[in-house]
Image (cartoon, rainbow, N blue to C red; front, side):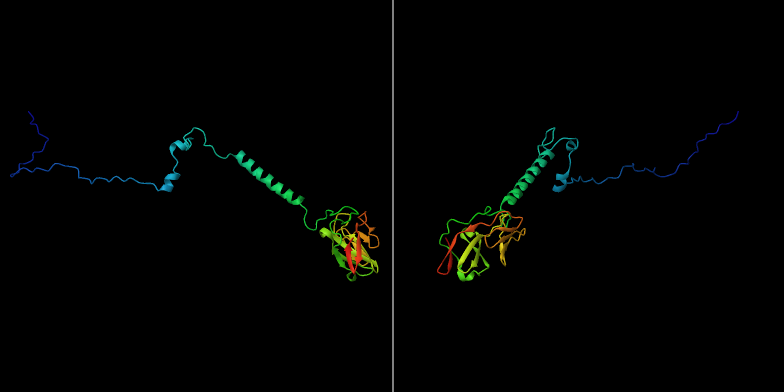
Length: 212
C-alpha cells in the first residue's frame, strides 16, 4: 500500500503571542464644500432659457410680442419722405429774390400810392441817357431824359420773364436773356421779349422828378 502525501505545507508553530493585524478601513475624506456660482447681472440677462430657445416669448405668449414690423417701419419711412418732398416743393414754389417771374405784366405801369414822391433830382438824370431808381412800392424804374427838361420813367421790368433791365448807353438791356428796349419809347428792339416796357407818369417840379 502506497502512503499518501498531504500537498499542503505545514507551517511550523512560532512561540509567542499571535499577531493580529488591524482591520482595513477607508481613509477619511474631507467634505467637499458646495459652491453656488452666481452669474453676473449682464450674463444672467443675456442667458436664454430653454423655453425661449424653443419658441416661447418673454411675454409668456405662444406668439411673438407686439412690436414694430417691417411693414410699419416702411410705412413710417415713406411718410417721412413724403413730408420732406412737400417741404422741398413748397420752397421751390416760393418766389426768391432775383427770380425770373414777372413782377408786372407786359406794358404795366407802377402807378398808385406814390403821387408826389420824389424820384430823383433832374440834374442827376443825364440828357440823352438814363438813371435807375426805385419807384413806389420799390418797383424798379429807369428815368430817361431824351431832351433837356423832359423826363420819361420806364418800369424796368423785362416783359419776357421779369428780370430788371439796366441802362446801356442809349438802350435798356435785360441781363437775363438779352432783350433790348429803346429809350425813346420803351419798344423792343431785340427779343425774346415781345411787349414794350411799361411807363410811370412823372413831372418835373423845381428841379425834381416827381411821380405824377
